[in-house]
Image (cartoon, rainbow, N blue to C red; front, side, top):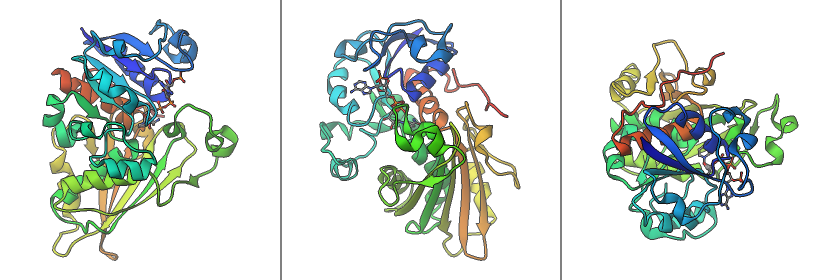
Length: 345
Ligand SMILES: NC(=O)c1ccc[n+]([C@@H]2O[C@H](COP(=O)([O-])OP(=O)(O)OC[C@H]3O[C@@H](n4cnc5c(N)ncnc54)[C@H](OP(=O)(O)O)[C@@H]3O)[C@@H](O)[C@H]2O)c1
């Protein structure tokens, strides 16, 4: 059995990692860390884990990485980078769910996260953990930057079209609705029940930190830079992301070819489902699973393509994707621990 530890086990993504890992046939949990909840039992903080995990939470220290095969960092951004250099001194593989190692350029990180990167020399070492695009590099990596939830939905939707050079890379518009758990477990006014229930609100317009990550990932799939206009919206649901990704089709692209291109790009991928014609992604169908549902349509009147994408922000948008990457890094079957379907209704 491979030994897995989780730093930040009491947050939403940490709890989701544990929910998946207790059913994983080839791993066992070693250390679980927390900050304000250190010293308590995980089941007292995450009642859904009662009867499945019975472990006392400890504070994060360099020793946590010793003797384990993979350490997940489910920590706030800027916290991960305070610990990673020390943690990397062990042989342990690290998967960071925060944004600290996703951007290649420390200047871009500093501009968007409003703080200088503490170890920019590690940015070139970190591999962007989207297996559908970077599986071979993930296999070799010691440090994986797990993609953000919004970027995963948008990049999987658009990357095949960028690769084919079918869309104008300066015309991309992404409108994306997220469930409230995307903001984490800490208290915030906008995520309280009375504020979020039965209401949809926009936030972070023109300055959401996932914007440069989406642009970087799509530029990597295309032949040049991309500019993305990104509108994040908070939707009254605990989990889920529904992204509407549109772009101008370049002359000569047959509108009907778009769905075929998606199907071709993801043939054989265990978690990406390109839906049959006429069916559209819905968040509920992916909830609790590691699936991404995609479908596209060409709007011939405006000359634009629309790709819809649905996933669970805690699943393929965070913990599920991290487990998938861990499986790749450890040489395990990629679907191990991830075979559950969506919880619908
Ligand atoms: N939520 C999502 O849908 C989602 C999706 C993709 C990526 N992410 C990213 O994943 C990371 C975790 O997100 P989350 O939603 O799980 O956050 P969260 O619910 O706020 O949980 C944060 C975790 O980090 C611990 N922690 C907080 N400050 C710490 C510190 N200074 N030192 C050590 N541990 C500390 C907390 O411990 P205590 O509980 O003991 O305070 C808790 O376990 C974030 O970087 C987030 O951006 C989240």
